[in-house]
Image 1 (cartoon, helix red, strand yellow):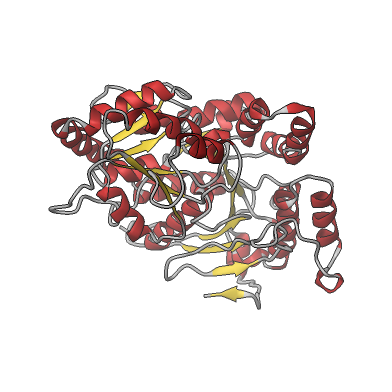
Image 2 (image 1 turned 135 degrees about the horizontal axis):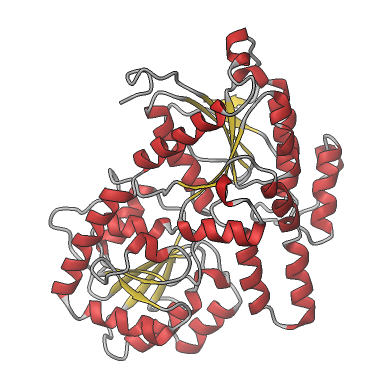
Length: 444
């Protein structure tokens, strides 16, 4: 049922995304699916984003708010040509990059505030997706309530990367790169309404960022069950294990899965791993692939990237087992999507994963984080037991359908939009005045 059919006023929402490509991380997936479902509920949602630009469904407009795109491939950490500089924000972006920091959350927030100030009559509220930049603290002075999603505090990533850093020089580099987390902590404490995707993330936000508990609300996300669903008569490829690892970072635990695969293959020689992500050219995972002889042409580990949602669903359905080996997850879309297809899942208990996968052993085989032996045992158990695979897969899908869909996420989010508007002095006045702004860079 749409908002109008329910007798409610449709909302005009500015959804901000400083990093929105759905093929390079969960933030882009969130923006794409939430915006689509908000539009289906009858709301007017406009995504305002920087590179890599979001990929959106038909009917959701995108306004491009370009950065200097300093990390683009094939020339990351590039130095822009003088003619590329437009203003002092560009200079700040380059200076921060040159000194080893990560500027995008701050500089996007400054550009977004400037854009919103020119269009304050176009929106009822602003929804920020994890930018947490200083510039967004000014949105309420523009007459726009601010709701912010924090998937999980990036301080968690920082801790894990520091723990994995080798030597003083690398630790100092990690500290500088994550310097923006100080800003995010300061901003988070001043936010009136924070949404997050799990109880685990809520606790981390309260503990790590110091946000008052009454300001943090859980709205679970989920899978697009129209795409991620069982296929009648699907054929499993013997020994296939599928995982998603969009970045070669300790947080995702890929190194432990590679080690587990080497153990599994002593019992199940056909076992092989398909990783949805980019093959690392160097680093711990690349070293381990060489050590066990699992990489290379025709090896037991294959990487795929740039595939569509439909292709991803087909890939997951082709596997006998899906695996999420992460040390920590704020939610885990790959877990929900695998369960939605009816593919049996092995996952760690890191972060929010037990909230998604269940804790009774009926919907997932759960193992401790960073335990390659436990991963290997669980994978071997599923590869060797078709009945167990069938039972876990069916129960996993039912869990997702009952708890974790994007329509449910959109409806829960709208409830918090309306609460933010109700508590905001003067909210809705800009709509009543009939003022509006224009943007020449809006892309349909």
